[in-house]
Image (tube, rainbow, N blue to C red; front, side, top):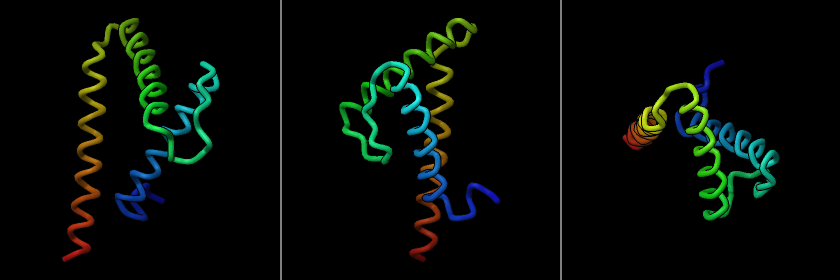
Length: 95
């Protein structure tokens, strides 16, 4: 079974759930338990929690001689491609 079996939109929803799982685990470690298990997280809570996690990932990167910019550039490139796939699929469905 492929991540894309149900289409790009559902694949991206699955990716969002993976991110939620990571943020929930991080929040449990830091005491930032903002999630109710759904993808609906208040903007300020999401920005705080994800920002803190990214900062800690950047500390890990620095300890491994990787520039944080490489991580953000790579991540944003992946995100843009995945959204583009979703939009192309939507356009194809419209005709």
